[in-house]
Length: 176
Image (cartoon, rainbow, N blue to C red):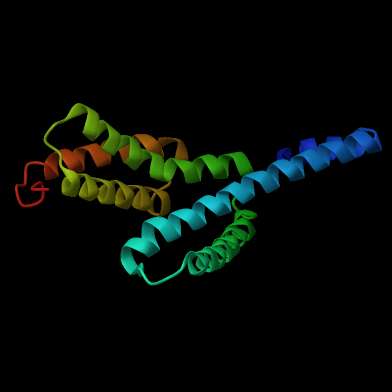
């Protein structure tokens, strides 16, 4: 029996006429290249504009220098994503691995969103502490327990909300 991740490619390759199979493979590769291109562009742009410029940006650099930096950052992120892809080969089914990975930050994100919508007490420092607590809990749950990935969002959101609400009662933390 064919593994489920290989079922569709196997069908396309073995059962479609050669021209149709070639078009389907070309369409899949085009979609993958488009997604990868926009991903690398977004990562490089965010790294340069949101991290590098506020921390190390100098007014004396020309736009050409920032363009060169962006290209190097794009190369860096490309290598990182290739390494992740090579590691992901051992993570099991693609859909489950993707959803498990997405569940890790989404719990903390949902928790801090709930803090902002449902409370008025929580300020920036408490929210940052809450997200840190949510990520720490999900890290423990992911690597230290046998809890299924389907619970990561619920655990992360609940922990983030609880930590943020508790931190909001500490004046030194919740001052800003």
